[in-house]
Image (cartoon, rainbow, N blue to C red; front, top):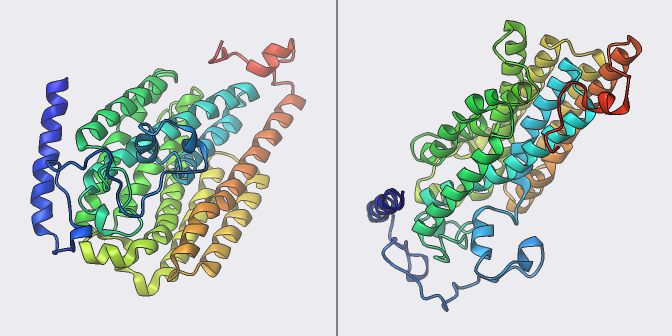
Length: 384
């Protein structure tokens, strides 16, 4: 296994040298480093300051580059990866009348998985981009870009992250394993998409939205067992993909000038002059597909009205207010806009779940012989 990892590191090194030769010439401070060059451990890159606040500031100094590599200091991406899992789980819970504690346990597992796999995706992305990141103002102080870690160590760290993700995936029903593993292909190819297409955000959307498929098998429902159910799940997935492309298009505007210089493609560059029109179209698609998913899965008018109003309202507000020429505005709406839209959808789904549970309780379909049976139903607790 170590030999395989070593060979992969060598391939990264050769790729780095090839890509560096094709980049435009830079000043001494902005030059691209290959993997054969190593900074002395005592040398600090210009302008880099170790974190003085936040969770990772309490970590040992040698751990901080790994925490930064996994973006533990920037959790917004973790929340965006978790939301499709949450939507799917709450929708499946309403569909199956799953007991509350089982839903909470499933959501806790999904959040942990989002934290791990988002970190793994960021590490893979930084390995691909380690010779481009030094040329982009926002990314030039990332651990690989400033050479706080070698590519081999980052690759080894990726292996541990993926193993942790696999271990967590095995805590779900076996069907989740078959539905979850294919997403790794999308995670690994997103950085490549930035080099060959102006629509890498679509590939990112396919990867980040994969959790929309996972909630149903996690609660014991095979997504392909019923054609109507499958169509509803696909509609939910499409809604999440549209949302991902939308918020990442806003995010991409922070780097639009640097991306143009180093040859990174993005939907923001391709549609720079009509960005808000594209964002509006994506918002319409997201809202329409979300309502379609609810209708196909027999959701009540409570869900259909609450989610459509909150989704359209929060996205419309963001599109209206965001100042695309100002990186700080793009970052604010990327960081907090997800809570507005994702939070609104989640509350609508939660209200639907409570409504469906109450209705079935009044119809005598919820077991009431004992409180444990009421909480767990016929599914044993995951953490027993």
